[in-house]
Image (cartoon, rainbow, N blue to C red; front, top):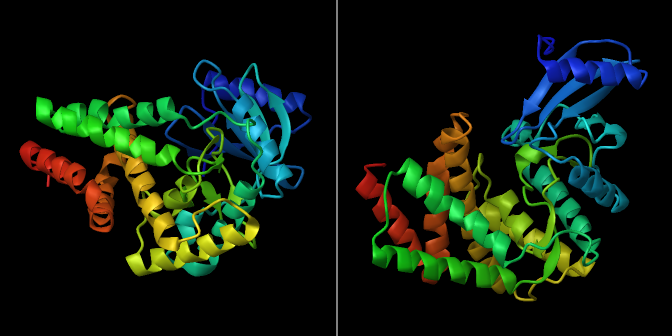
Length: 332
């Protein structure tokens, strides 16, 4: 790694702020940047490793991050401790939860042990839910997310315009997906609970990238974890983990359907909403933000959609339509 300062004015301002916190001048190493405008740096000072967040206020608001971090820690979960903050400048000084994400280690280590720890943490998070504390994952938000698919993936990436009949089918299926999501019990939802946002270590995972948390469908975070954007699992393995979660959730008093198959169906429907949203987001990141590579994982979501249609036949006409669009666009 190398010092990431250069002539970047925000990094220079960040350095000045860190000195004001009593931290000695030292190299800032880039940890990661995500699909937003946030950046993270690691700072070694006084024998302790810390993480510094740079979130430009013109693009990002740190207050939800601070709020949700507090909720996670109050629930006994392994979220960063906020050691200092400057909300006006968009700087946060955080405890360091480690260097390896679940995505880094899942294929090498004990996947079952890691995922079960993540499922235990998820149940603990959901069981701590207090209504009205987080924004609602309501119909308007669910629909805005779905609209990313026709706007960015269909129109911009596939370069297609749906026919009137295709548009009507898409609208009808969007409404069905939203209605199914809203019919579920409501819990705190991380909204991106996936291996890339879980830090591996001993015991409970470190949880990051939680600033978009809402109160919404109980199946959302589970399906985000099991049908991830960057790593896939055999159906038998996924079923094992879904069953593990279902038992743990019922034991903890989380309001999931008593019948496992009913809950699995809820997960499948919820997953399709997320898959379409993420396909739209990946296309937007590629074309608007100039960050290539995300669309390389689009075929994974088409596989998930095929799986969903096999599990829930009512989803078949939507999945068939999306495949016809790919054929029409010449995308394999």
